[in-house]
Length: 84
Length: 204
Image 1: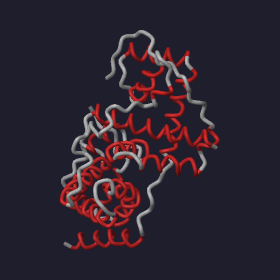
Image 2 (image 1 turned 90 degrees about the vertical axis):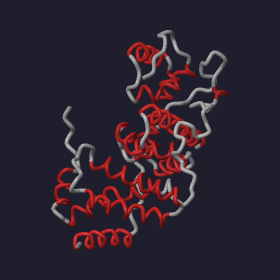
Image 3 (image 1 turned 60 degrees about the vertical axis):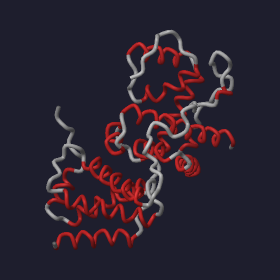
Image 4 (image 1 turned 45 degrees about the horizontal axis):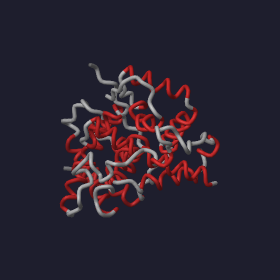
């Protein structure tokens, strides 16, 4: 949980707090200060949007399917297991 | 505290009853992610496949005693990381997770210091996100590339959280990390991938 005095934070500090913000790991005074900064700072808002875009794009990555031989091998192992 | 219902409860019940289709469904659902995770710990795809196979056998052996206090997904991924770590150690690989908080880049900042003026306001600010370009396959490829260039522990955290969609708590349990370490690794990982994404979007 991040805690800081509630004075206005510089942009350079805001970018280091973005993950705490998105993870819900800020106490109330810091959250208020963070959100007040964002409201008045289009640059940090863009930064946050880019982080959110990064997360969104990452969420569209899919792992390669298992190669058919390997998948078949796993199912075979299942059968063998069931027989013991 | 009651647990949320496990999304895999029906498959789990069917697997307990020995249903092959349930096993195949779980293999198809989680096999690719397990294989990707295993490859962070061991030297080759072939060894990673063995680790994945061992994991499924451990699941079949352990399923009777599995009480569902963690989700099936967490249990499965945790078995995988245990086995992959053991295997990686036996191979003499330096363990990416041995010193978790430190990956040699403590000094790192989310954004290059040159982009700020003295006093910490933006000097070279980021621009808005061109939403229409985010859906392009090329953008996804760049993000994927940036993720694979990360140190293994950052890569494991961002992959579990943002690619596989695990919660923070699940990722901590799977990787054996404290909440704080998990968050630090996620922060560094996302910051680097964002930098790559920004560079790509601005170049074109």
